[in-house]
Length: 137
Image 1 (cartoon, rainbow, N blue to C red):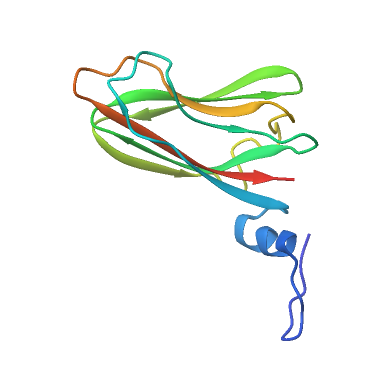
Image 2 (cartoon, rainbow, N blue to C red):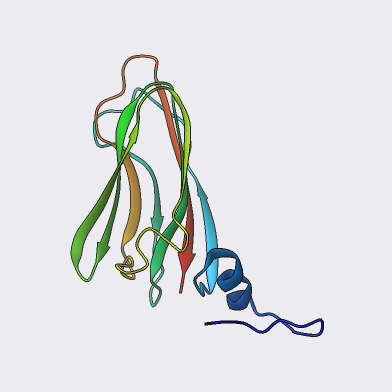
């Protein structure tokens, strides 16, 4: 969809999201996680519950950890579990920008969740955190 924008054009939220994210999301939500100390394997670091009647896609994420690990993004699409694995090779922060969205072709179903979790247990004294930018339509 191409938008013709002139000096007097009124843009809707969906129009702005189409321009900025490359997909006509009707709403965008930022989900901020909290720091988790030495998480056990497969700990949910952050999650977003998809509202009834909506579909959701992960636009971007930010992972902060004091050590390297693997991370899974997990969601339900078409009644089937889906996942995407990310690697943080060492301590630090990594950001992923999936515009128009990691899973726009297999969006999260209504009344399910998009979850980011660590794969391996965190060592003693480690800290983990994950944030997500979610697009809804």
